[in-house]
Structures are given as structure tokens and as C-alpha cells.
Image (tube, rainbow, N blue to C red):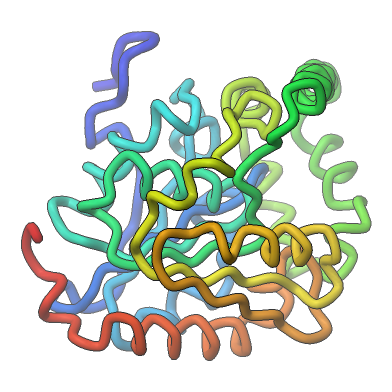
Length: 276
């Protein structure tokens, strides 16, 4: 049953799929804007070789199109639904990384390790944040006018995604998203709507890996500024010859780096079973 408007969703409202061995460490994957849980390419299967992988739809996307939630409001229900009482590993890309950051702050009991791909903790300057919020509103209104297919064409035409080909862009999956759902995501979970988390990073003590593409100059700079602010250990991994969606451009190299790091920071998967 869907939740009433304005209420946090019950666990069954969060659509997700699970692959891998349930006796191993759980890894939750959170996708970026205009995507859905089917837009990870080979990444889930590669990372599921020695862990249980959960892929979920973010609010406003895929089968969660009807969920109207900010990142802050989504953090606890998503942690409850996807961690299921376990201390999971969380991997978020772009918007999904911002959601993962909110989960780490709201539910540290549910986060054993955090991987953020091309992720920003928000805009610190209030005036710049207000300007971005206005831009996101204009973009949402444009999306509602032109529809998902045209919007996705325009979205993927940005230099940020120049490294994606037809297969790795997951254009067909993106086009299946509901335009009203995507517009609500921009208004509620866009960078302009999100409160800045820069000052809160120090309260995250779980180990963190920041992954960026070598050609993604903007987010590489953000990652380097974020790294020293976390309260626990943080590493930065730069993937050669890739852009913003480095996990889709070079999935095998990406999974080799991420998988090795996750194994290193949490080598005993059995320790992650049950409530900590």
C-alpha cells in the first residue's frame, strides 16, 4: 500500500532487487538522477561475487515514481527497507551518493562503509543554493513540458556524459521514467533543495571511498575538498580515462577498485550479519 501524501513510505514502498549470497555482507546501490535500479550495467553482478547486492529505485524514479520525498525524508525509510536491520555497505552515484550521505548521517547504525561516486555534499553558499534551486525548478517545469524522452536526450547530451555510449547510457531505461516523478525529484531532492552537508561530514565515522573519473574535473575537485572533512578514514580513487559516470564507462576497472577497498575495510562479512 502506498503511503499517504507527505508521510514516509513503509518498507514495501521501496522497490529493490537482490542478488548474491544473503550470508555475506550486504551492499546497497543507489543510482543517479534520470536512472533507475536497472541502470547499473554489469556492476551489480561483478560486485555480487562475494557479497549480497541490493539495487533500489530512488524516489521519483522507476517503480518508486510515486514517492515524493526529499533526501532527508528518504534516509530513514530507505535505510530501514534496504539494510533490514544489518550494517550494510552503501554505494551511491551522484544523486544516489547524496542520498547515501543522508543515510549515513540519519542512520549510522545501518552504514558499515560508504562509497560515493561523483558526489557532492551540497552547496554551502545560501545565495548559490537559492540560484540552483531556481534552476532546478525551471528544469523540472521544462521536463514536464517536453516529456521524458526529449529530456533524457538533452540530459545525456551534456559534456558530463560524453564518455557514455548507447549501451552504457541506459537511454531506454531512463526514458521509461515518469516525467512527473523526475520533476518531483528535481524539486525535492535536487542540489538546490538539499541543505548543505559540508559541515556534517565530520560526524560520519564509517570508512569512506570517494570515486571520480579523471576527466570529471568538477567532482574531482569536490572529492579532494571533502576527503579531509570526514570523521573517519577517507580515500579518493581516480579512475583513468573516465568522466562523471565512471562506473558505467569502465565497470570492470571500477568494480576492481571498489571491491578491493570494500574487502579491505570490512574483511569479515559474517561480522555484518544481524543488528550491530
